[in-house]
Length: 107
Image (cartoon, rainbow, N blue to C red; front, side):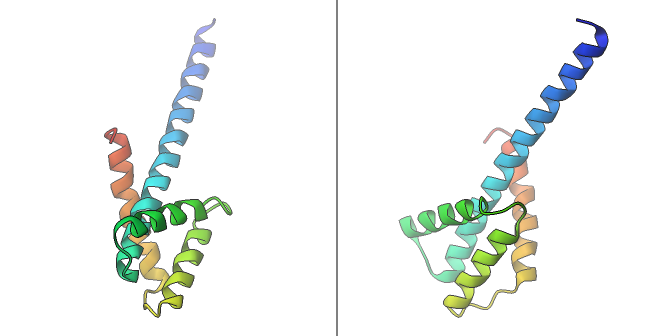
């Protein structure tokens, strides 16, 4: 194997690892976001954990964060809880940083 091939293989492995960590961080962020939303909705205990799983699952509907934001916005509206889309997106950004740090630390 040439030096070029070794470097290329190294870059491919790094890319795969980065993508895996990104996926894990986004899933963790969505779980944390679901727990945050559950608290705002008055959902506690096992029901809060189940709700957080629903938020994680909502992210698989389409690419990007719009599906998660749409779910939370609808759930907040259904319970007459006032939380803006901007507040949801701000919390998503905040929790993504937390989740990425946790994934990087191997938690």
